[in-house]
Length: 103
Image 1 (cartoon, one colour):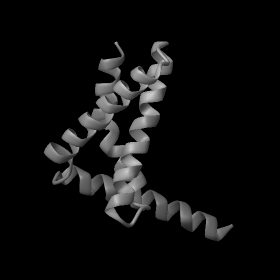
Image 2 (image 1 turned 90 degrees about the horizontal axis):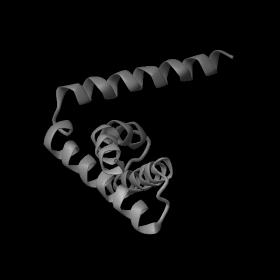
Image 3 (image 1 turned 45 degrees about the vertical axis):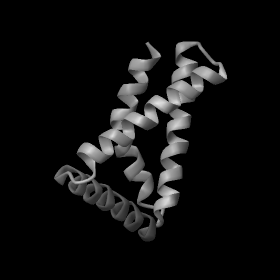
Image 4 (image 1 turned 90 degrees about the vertical axis):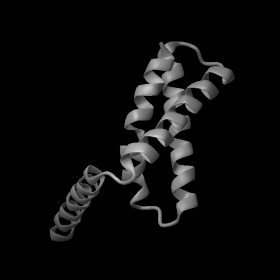
């Protein structure tokens, strides 16, 4: 069951990596943030599944990372939805910053 959950998390992981990646200027940093987020997701999946061994955490993390990279390269990287998603996230952040400045 954890493989299915890891795969589903890998499908939505590019959204989260793009959100975090807006604040990381270099590509190596964005890569390592994707690795770290996949590792965290693997730990969460293993905890939820009740199998907290190093091998299970590694396997779940690897599934999340691999699927997220495939989804990103095949669908998300050149998608028009990606640009609108990033623009809407940027708008939300700008609005939050303006509200902070007014206080």
